[in-house]
Amino acid sequence: MAKNAAPDADGSVVVDLDGVLVLAHSEKQDATATWKKTFGHHPLMAFVDPGSGGSGEPVVGLLRPGNAGSNTAADHITTAQLALA
Image (cartoon, rainbow, N blue to C red; front, side, top):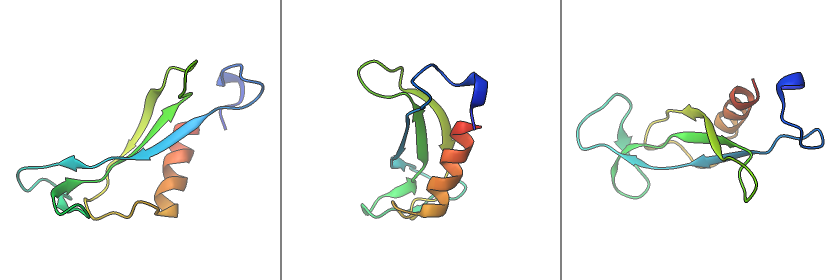
């Protein structure tokens, strides 16, 4: 995991995973119909140390097609591993 590079937070690192819809107005690579009846991408983002005292710095963005599921475990695991790398 982050080992010695981790911030001093009593041995823990907070990583917030969040999916967001990004609309595309033309046919971009992997852009597809979304669950909100639009067209675009559904990337999964990872932010480190969110909250009132944290920076909320974005560290990973996993580009996914617009029809990617919100609760895809494999994508969440991949994004978390990349964020902690």
